[in-house]
Image (tube, rainbow, N blue to C red):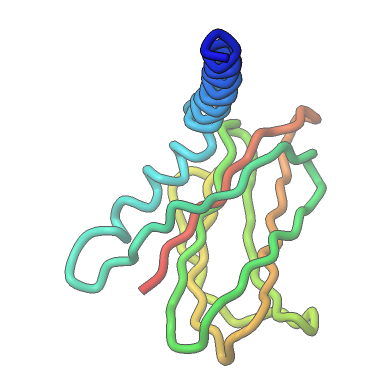
Length: 156
């Protein structure tokens, strides 16, 4: 009986170890550096300082975008908050743009924040009501290569 218990314990230990190693590998993969996210974070630095600064959220989105194409990102926003979104791609020739739409598909008034680099775009929005909103990110570029992208955001 004792031997059997040890055998089951060893098997259980191996199984738990295997799951822990897989989880660790996934964490390492998700924590790897992302050029688009780093560019967006650099662009956000000035908005994250001072008395009236934005609080950067840990959530972020990324993927690959084809020049001339657009993507939508769904996000719930709250009426009394103010949000700033940053969209960045690593390619220096890229021209990034970001706009926000409400759940009815209407363009929401927002304040564009400009940067010297055309591959970073940002906008500040103050929602009129709490609800689902859509960020529309788009990319134009002189070449046809796809780009990795990242969007980060903060609130205050």
